[in-house]
Length: 165
Picture (tube, rainbow, N blue to C red):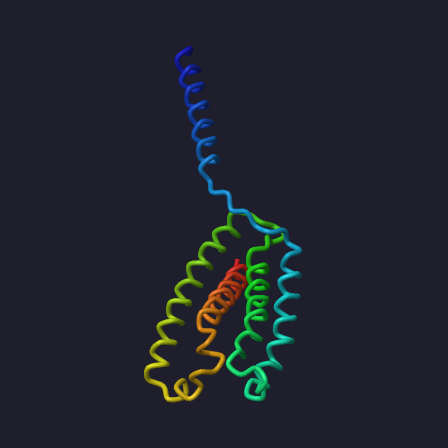
């Protein structure tokens, strides 16, 4: 009987050590507070309110000359910052399932970004329409558009997977 108590004592402490080790090795993923979602949406709306008229009057910006892209860079940066703030904000209830959904969404967004870049290159090579808009905003901001595509695909994937759970 003494041996059984001793074995139970050893097993109990071994399991505690395993649990402590598992908790120590879990990655710490720091997220922004939940109210940053609202701030991110505000940045995105502000950028869209400014960018839509700029896209509409792209050809009429005669005074800008070759420096037209400098009108867009700050607003694209604000758009990217808003999307990043929204995507890095915590949910109201953040648990292990949400962390798993975040990880899967990041992987899917990365794959979407790769296919977007491949499609963009093939489209530039073969499509006459892309050749017509060469030199426009789409070519000069290719990297920014890819980043925006990745962030939007992450947000859409994350929200759709979260609703399915």
